[in-house]
Length: 274
Ligand code: AMP
Picture (cartoon, rainbow, N blue to C red):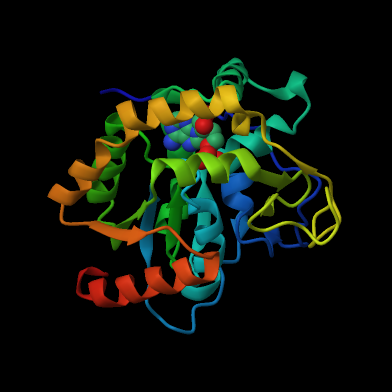
């Protein structure tokens, strides 16, 4: 399959991220979330192991929360395609390219963004896949075509994935988690109305920003997302199992417990890590 790789879908850097006199940013995700050409400082990695992981699992399994916790434990950068789209959505609508406008429309309804757009965005940020700090891919790949494009790219660039962590969760728990999820509009922190309520209702514990229900966490969109997951994303389990990369982890329990479980599973899997 031929992929478009040269389009600059998201406009250059947002004023929210500070760049120093040498053109460097202290935000390790500036190159992913804002400007693929920005030079960011990867997190320091005292442990020395460079983890290159795909975090996989149904919507609501907690991939984003785990990516956040794991990025601190493993010192690897959290690269979320969903966050990339949400970050683009916060720009002035006039500055969005037609491809991004279409992508955001798909996202609002819980549908998948077209593969060509997703891959163009990831390809544009391929420097992040070379990062010496490693990476935690969250929400990508989501289709067989995306997984194959990623695999071809990684093999060509001689980058080895350490593992694909597959977070497993029963359907009733998925629906409960997604329906009660609230996200901070300012800093993207995630809460749950029952399982992890904020100290003050409707406000983020970390930055005081307003907590909102993501459009794609509304019941109509949840139904679409789960169907799409079954049809288009779940087959990747088999794909990565065949590559010997699949690492199943139970996603029930508190975020800290799941994180601990993941780190233990990764340590046992370590012989495969580059
Ligand atoms: P997430 O934050 O990972 O749940 O992603 C939110 C939404 O962004 C998804 O429901 C999709 O509409 C879109 N999206 C994120 N990543 C991808 C991807 N790899 N392929 C297609 N659509 C994506």
